[in-house]
Image 1 (tube, rainbow, N blue to C red):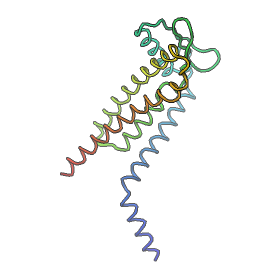
Image 2 (cartoon, rainbow, N blue to C red; image 1 turned 90 degrees about the vertical axis):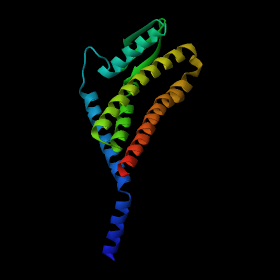
Image 3 (cartoon, rainbow, N blue to C red; image 1 turned 180 degrees about the vertical axis):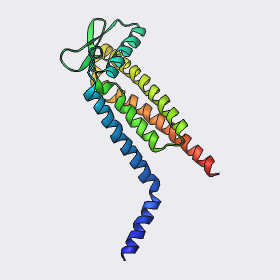
Image 4 (cartoon, one colour; image 1 turned 45 degrees about the vertical axis):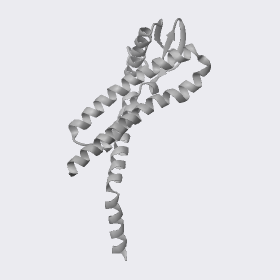
Length: 192
């Protein structure tokens, strides 16, 4: 009876091996990368880059992009919280905080791709390209959100709470779909 239960458990494990592997890699990588990022946030102290280097650089690049669109912009460190204040035409419109820098979104993206790893070369190439695209898309997202809040402030909550998160997470979802389709095509060729 005990051996029968163990063989059933083993059979269930064998049937679901791909799912178990996916979940193990995804959550394992997510926990490790989140802890590494948290360690970075806890240990980084910079007199030059406030609140920390990644968020600071995102704020400056967003400022440059908005300037490219023809607005007079200015970014300064906040004196009240760990954020960068971004102003348009002399009026401070948004705060850019650590959560705006897309690192957590990139970690989520990276973990999913690792869980569907093919060969290391194409996996790392896709992770690098996807991370760069997500980062650039995020800077564009913040710039458009800032301009939107400046131009139509009555829709700030809709833009910040719904449209622009959908913008970035929708883009990540499209990258995942692209990876899975490519993964299945390669898997089918390898099985043929």
